[in-house]
Image (cartoon, rainbow, N blue to C red):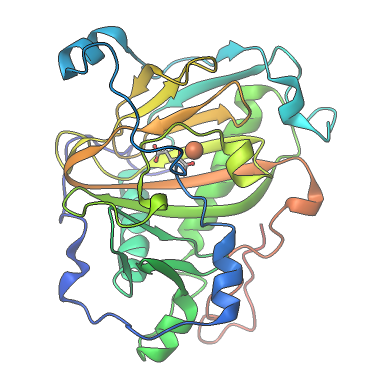
Length: 324
Ligand SMILES: O=C(O)CCC(=O)C(=O)O
Ligand SMILES: [Fe+2]
């Protein structure tokens, strides 16, 4: 592993795709199908904006929320129904759910490489509201208020698509995250699952569709089905690249925020994906926030078997696969 990811080193700002050509006409049934797993991204709007806590002021909110820091895993009881089918040794034991924040799992070079990968794909699209999603496994990329297929977008724009070696860092990072999940929760056999995606939230775009309202509480297991362990890897810096945008864990009973995590480059948040962990992203009030959501399952039927398999082979190589 190279140098640990530094804090506060803002590079070029996110959201610079404005000048890049956008593909305006690109729809396909296949795209809608592949996007369907991603349509529920972030939080689904459930009954309008989230009510403010207490008197609603930022100060009163910040006094009540615990600021979570890197450290050992914090265990909580699992929500039993969230973890079916039970795969012994892989799904969490009833009292072994929890979350953990880890800094420095990936190097600054890896953060930069992942940011470039995200920016290159997102330059072909861009959500009309705040969030832009890019899932390189399914190909789903936000464009205005729908999804297109990023691989098709590369073809139509006559730009060279990602090569397998270009995406190697992404593959290596997901493998490292899998190992960290296993070490953290004392399990083995976790497998990458879908969706796994970059998300960029731009403060200057008001929500246009319900899925743009990322600040509502949700549970990943309900939202995405196959998730057993979620990892959020942050690729931009709160206070430098953007303001607001903390990850908040909510009370399973009231769904109100009880604690929060400040996103910083290279910071990873690992947590069990069941009903013990409702969460949401605080509204981003300025700038642009970039993160990567990666998730793991214990069920081979929902595992990704050919992660990044749509990337171009490298010149001169027959086929260097990046199987998940
Ligand atoms: O980016 C974050 O901090 C949270 C994203 C999230 O909750 C999700 O992708 O399900
Ligand atoms: Fe989530």
